[in-house]
Image (cartoon, helix red, strand yellow):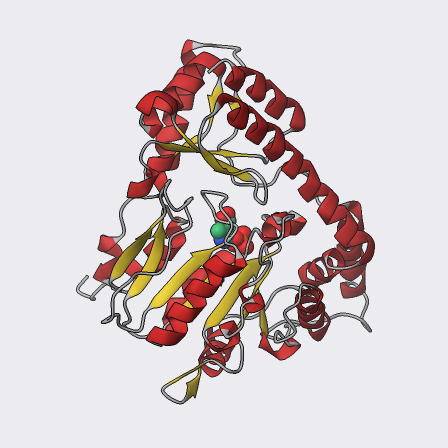
Length: 394
Ligand code: PLP
C-alpha cells in the first residue's frame, strides 16, 4: 500500500512498563507458587458502584425499554440534567463561572485529553515530569514540540512555571491532585501558573480527575484562581470519583471567555465534538447525575473515604520511617523515594521478592521519576494493612 501514514506515531515511545511489570510478577509467581501478591500498582478502582448510582442507571435502562420514554441519540454535549448537575458541583466548590453551557460531557477524561490537541495548532507544549503519559503521547502523535516542567524533591513534585522573557505562547498541562505523585497545588502555586499563562498568552489544560480526594484546604478547580476562566480549560472524570472506570463518563469545561486570535475556543471544541463524537448513553449520564447529589454523592464520598484511609495508613508508615514521599493525603497515590538510593526497578524487585508487593517504578512516568516509586490506595484495607506491616520492616 502506498498511502501516507501519520508518521508522528513513530515518535511515541513503546511503553513496556506494564508488560514488564506483568512479566516480573509472572516469573515471581512461577518461582513462588502459592505466595500471596499484594497489588498496589493498579490505578483502577476496586469498590463496586454505589447501589444508589446503579439503581439510577437501572431506572434509566427501564425507561429505555418503554416506547414513551425511549431516547435515541443523546445531545452531543450531554443532557441538560447532567450539564446542570456538573455546573452546580462547580458552584458548590466556589467556581460560579462554570455555567452549564460551558460543560461538554464525554466518555471520559482520557478521550478529552487525547482529543483536545485536534483543535489546537502547532504550539509548544509544556508538560510536567513525572507525567501521566497521555499528555505526552497525544501531542507527539500530532508532531508537537514538548518541553518538561520538572517535578523534584526540592519543589515537592509541584513544577513551577519556566522563567525567562522570551517564552512563546504554549499549551500547558497541569494535573492536581497529580498522578503519579499525589502532590496537590496550593492556591499560590496554581496562581503562578495562571499568571504565567496570562502573561505569555498560553492555554492551560487542567486535569482534575482526582479532585474528589482533596480534603485539605487546596483548590478543587483551576477556576478558584482569578483569571483562569480566560486561559484554562478543565478536564475531569467520574472514573475515580464515582467508580466509573468501566462505565465511562467525564467532562471538559471550556469557558466562553477563552479566545485565540478572535476565535472562541469553545466554538472549535463544540464543532469537534459535534463532528466526531455522538454523545454518552442516557443510562450512563443518569448514573453520573445520581453521583453528584443526595445519597449518590454520599455513597461515592464513602468509597473515596475508604481509599483515603488506605492512603493514610501507608503515609503514616513512610512518615514514621523517615522515607520521603508526596501524596497520600489528598490523593490515592503515594510517591516515595526508594530507600538506599535504589532505582525504581531495583526497589520493585526487592519488595516483590521480599513481600509479594507490586507497585510501579517511577521511571515509567518520566526522567524525574528515577529512583521513585508509586503505590496506590485502590486495594483492600486488609491488604493495605498487610503491606504496611511489611513496609515497617524496610
Ligand atoms: N487523568 C488522569 C490524571 C488519570 O490518572 C486518569 C486515569 O487514570 C485519567 C485522566 C483518565 O480518566 P478517564 O477514566 O475518565 O478516562
